[in-house]
Length: 127
Ligand code: FES
Image (tube, rainbow, N blue to C red; front, side, top):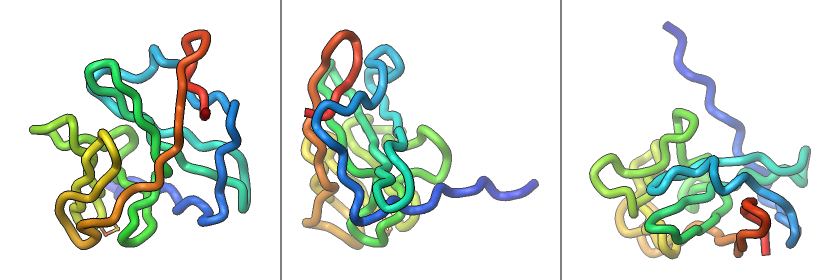
């Protein structure tokens, strides 16, 4: 069986413009996390949106250690035993979902790049 194909890392130049619709709120379980791709080429942004107890947070889906997307398998971002923690599957860094701070791993003390979001009309929107 072939290994799953990883997504390419997002461009370090990627920005998410305020007002960009990211995902329908109903598409994110609670607790849960989903990623979306916004834009193309150098403007391509990979965004992970996490939800826990009704709280939403969004981050650029790029580990501060190696720049890779956090997940190996689509949609698998959260620690199985603690859904308030995001895991980078490349080298195992663990990030607090509430603020993106790296609690443990090779980038301990660094953080995921946050994207402010709001909910409008049932959609998660970059604020
Ligand atoms: S790339 Fe994420 S821990 Fe190394």
